[in-house]
Image (cartoon, rainbow, N blue to C red; front, side):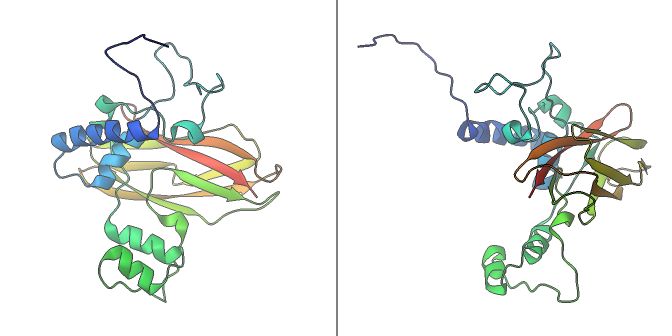
Length: 232
């Protein structure tokens, strides 16, 4: 019989991260009451970190090896940085409905999801790559292949400035091109769009994965997005 007792317990996992992040979202909402849920989520995602104060990368406790976006998602949240993210990737309900159209949901399914009648525009070319989410999931098929351009729109929620893009990648087999490479903002809530193109210069076995990161910075803010590559 184990009769040891303590006055506290430590529990980890996704079921615990949900209430923790919900509390941080409430903190950001209290500071920015006009921000949408999408803007708040973006602020938490793009300002998160993967390096401890010691300089060591976040570790996967189950293996002792450096963790990846499959483990931590967008990184470890930094609530102070999230209050001043510089730029946000905003989303509305209509954006999600357009995403459902891109996924070829039926009219009945979309109406059920929306709680109202919503019809996909037959003349519009919907793409799953256009959901304005602060991360990128890229499925690749092999040497010389490319995927549709990913379009993203960022909203300035900080001071005026010019943001320049940088890319870091662990895979030399994927060429990443961002257009334009700099975005200049002169006013609050100003929006600017950019596109990202991924092209393979080689191939990996099916079900292989690798990761990269896209960051916009003005010297004060760093707005980061994880990129996950999957080979089929």
